[in-house]
Image (cartoon, rainbow, N blue to C red; front, side, top):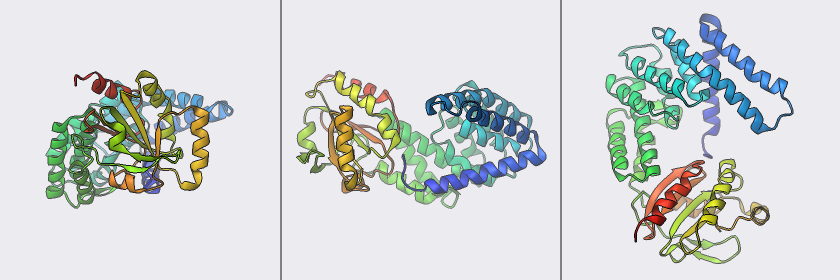
Length: 362
């Protein structure tokens, strides 16, 4: 969960959706399809008003799964006007992973590479939304767009999105080669497309921040920087003493953060699987000082047995480790070197990453 610019994202996406809806309702079949989808989504709340939130989310996801191929088909029918961009926006925001979603991004590769089209600005502004979209067809589409029109807004922001996707994946998979490729692409962004921008900001500024992360003391393969502080229980803490000879997971998280709390069952399973002589789990906690008593009660009631180091909101440890979103995970090998870095709800992958390091011969 990222703390900054949430209102900017909401405002920008609201603008796109409003524009998409207006164009569709006035001029194309897109508006009719959008209205059909919106009606079915609203029906879920109307027919099942008292259903648990998880059940409502599941029902709405099934609605979206039904509509994803319909929006993709509509995009293909409108390849010669800009309504296909509206379909792309819907699919990226609401589409369910699977063949239809992949097909949309294959279509983006075909249609987004045209030398001239009127929605270059709109698609360029939207391009960074593809960074975390779950489809293997996105990277080929972004590569093609970045090379197809070296002066276009969409092409320039496509290169930034591609570099960011490669960086994120390389850090999650522990591939220094991927980080090196991302570094080269980000250098190209700064050199060739510095003035293009998305809703997130200017290319040159965002690329410089990512380059700094790739070259920082907390990049993968680097020796983990020291952490000194105090645990939630009031004991002195020193990272190097705690992790020596063990595989370590460092979780920058907080109990204010829904995605962080959602990872607690995975973290508990990790500690059930391995002894404390093999694996150590450390939470660098970002809750405010006035919330710590509540955090202590929660930890006790939920049986959370990992080490919790207090850091506060935007604390010195988070700043030193260049944390900008929660949760962020680092997985360290027995020598204290950073092997994985990931942001968000990574699920059981966290256990898989630890498994590989625990079973690796010493």
